[in-house]
Image 1 (cartoon, rainbow, N blue to C red):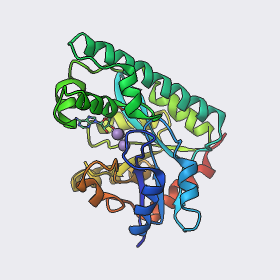
Image 2: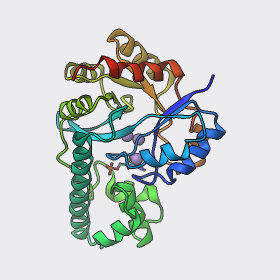
Image 3: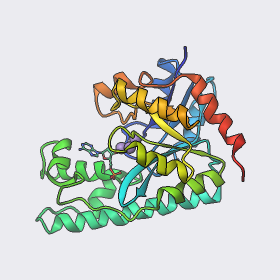
Image 4: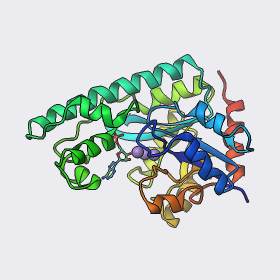
Length: 276
Ligand code: AMP
Ligand code: MN
Ligand code: MN
Ligand code: MN
């Protein structure tokens, strides 16, 4: 059966490859559908459509939004919204600015630890992409403050490390509302990492549409748990490889840690049920 990978990053956020390079991989894996879910942007969408135009690969608009849930940062996947919606365009613009301000705050914080990066260093690495911590990690490595990418997170950028700065993100409910108004649906990303059933239930109360059941970090028991939870609440089931192109392991997961087409069909049909 041809599968679908609905969690993929490109160099428009912190992924390594272009949309065209992703589409090449999708062809090799004989995928039926893909969604590029860059952090807080869907700039890759047009190029991805262009690169698939002589294929029968379906491209679903997507993004992975950073959101606040009760004071904690969570990732919310959005699918099948109207990419031309003013609300969505304003949302990604807002998120981009938030990320740039936060990167500046991190640069300042690192400065106090005698680690000298400039915003220009970071922007040069990002090369127009939405700025995220991996760009700072590469800048730290290039300047010799760390030996490798992971060490940058271990020493400075990890969630509990001294260089980390948390942003004042929009609430999960606010993002869900905007995505709905733009005709799309939402799914809580990789809940196996740190999200309880009770927390998912609270998100369902504010309109969450789906759960990311399939993800490389989810062991079989987690997959089953989230699949049952989704079925119980009649939620959508989503999944994908969370490909960033950073390792051979990720290459082996692309289009393999993926979902069946009937789940995709439900995602596409749910939109029609959305009132607004
Ligand atoms: P940001 O969205 O700016 O907070 O950056 C988060 C991104 O950094 C994630 O999507 C991962 O790609 C990457 N990341 C987070 N923690 C680590 C870590 N410990 N090691 C490597 N990459 C990480
Ligand atoms: Mn990432
Ligand atoms: Mn994520
Ligand atoms: Mn991701």
